[in-house]
Length: 297
Image (cartoon, rainbow, N blue to C red; front, side, top):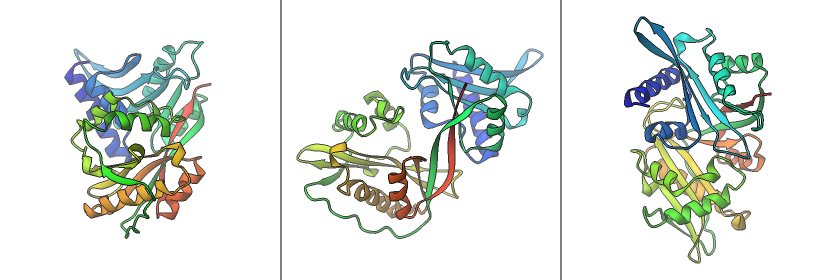
């Protein structure tokens, strides 16, 4: 794709976010567009033709790199071109690229919007996963408890990269998107303007990385007015679970975001992860919305 193509897709996504109050494309897709990276990644565009010119009115991306979970997709349609069959046409194009021997196609609908639910029902798609967005309003942050034998320090770019990727894979072994991150994926995010190593906390025990809390700051967000903080990624080594390290790292990150003057903080968590939801609820987070994953029959 040309730079103009990428710019048009980003503009389309921006218009949809402004209309819906939720971003239609996740960070990973925006990075794939920016770097033109990823084998077996397919891009689809819908255009309205007018004489010799055309207008971008829809976009979809198909990721076929996850062999076990199967292909996944994202779809966005321009607000002014909805209810005209564009979304259905993009779904048909996606389905044409999925072989009979592939696992069923999965499609994300961010924000759980009624229009997306209606299209899914019309096409016979079934919801199979919920990714909750939880938010914590401005409030005091309790002090983080000390964990015996554990020290916490800021991430060191170029020094801690490999150790973090290895721990992330262990902590998210059953999470298809997060657990598969590579050093290249990490460094692509480190190159983004929002990256701040001072807000990336690593927990060490006897020279081994055993936990982390990576925070993020959104300059503008549909989740609130002004800058919003995020519990971007929180991971704990399976051998450390049950010792309170996850809660301690959460509080350290929340205190850092509050010190930066950020009141509202958001996070993403699997809706069926009862223990994690319970921990976050006790820390003042409540469910704000949900991203729904549908599966083709």
